[in-house]
Image (cartoon, rainbow, N blue to C red; front, side):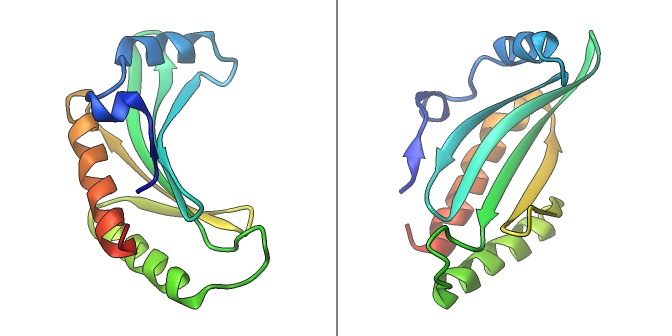
Length: 129
């Protein structure tokens, strides 16, 4: 299994702290990685529209081209299966830097922890972690 943050094990990290961090950021966004491996990263973030209007999101990022430059077709196929499942769950998929695909869904703050656990389980089952 990937490396867990303590926040992921105990439920959602402190959402108020994430909002506070976003308010202090010049980009009006904050992000916390909850789980990661060589193939993927899962995190939660918040974007501010105004000081009292914000949205939380879950992101799963899949690294399709490893730093070694060697393509592992088996892992690539499993990552593709993860992308398809997340798309079915309503996640938007975006290519980033030609090396990875970001899958993101806006989630109500009260469902962030549940969605994280669901996505982590989905990825673990497909990647056989």
